[in-house]
Image (tube, rainbow, N blue to C red; front, side):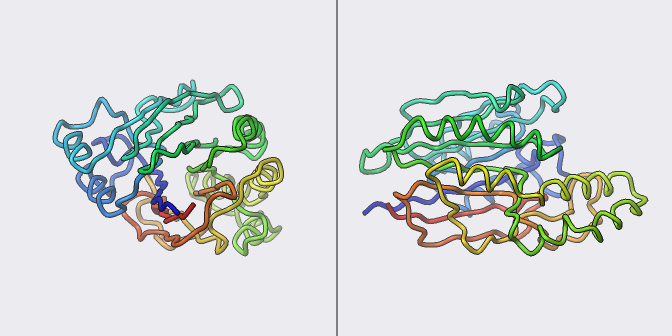
Length: 275
């Protein structure tokens, strides 16, 4: 039996000074990577790798990581952020795919320490509407199902909730919609509207129904807060789960943790898996 530690963390641009978050620095981001101590880390909203300071590139190298980066290549998305996978495993191949014709996501083939092949699919779905996410997740489903025998993980920020979670039920309720209409703060209202759509939950349901993957966090642990760029004064309490790790039946979960607040609106998520 083999063991693998994986993590996903939307870093809100923390790796590059001035990209997004004002609550953390590149040094803080490197410290988080060191603390996670995972074999594979998927990082949506990394920043841009070429803009890293040399000392931060060296720090990642010293921690044993190679970096595979893809820009989102989405017209209405800030070009200063990218999707990055940090890997301590040997990478055999990487392939870029499109999400609903809108933005890129990444498929990696890796070799574990026993030279067995693993497939990692790193994803960051759109945060604006459930309709867009449903369009994008169909493309991920197609890639997942093209290969059925290789142990496969899909990790990242899906901007979508499990519809059965308690928070999702509240967030999509009529009372919640009434409260949203009364919010005077423009950014908070926009956030609340997006959360209301994420709570519909059809994206996650569709994905699990269409693939041979299962959710590796049966506890549905919450991963995000409202404390983000522009509303740093918001509470840092965890609200909902939109960061996910899915896997084929090859994987059993030995440990699954959601980290503390480290300066992004997303907490890092780490799982130790046996297969």
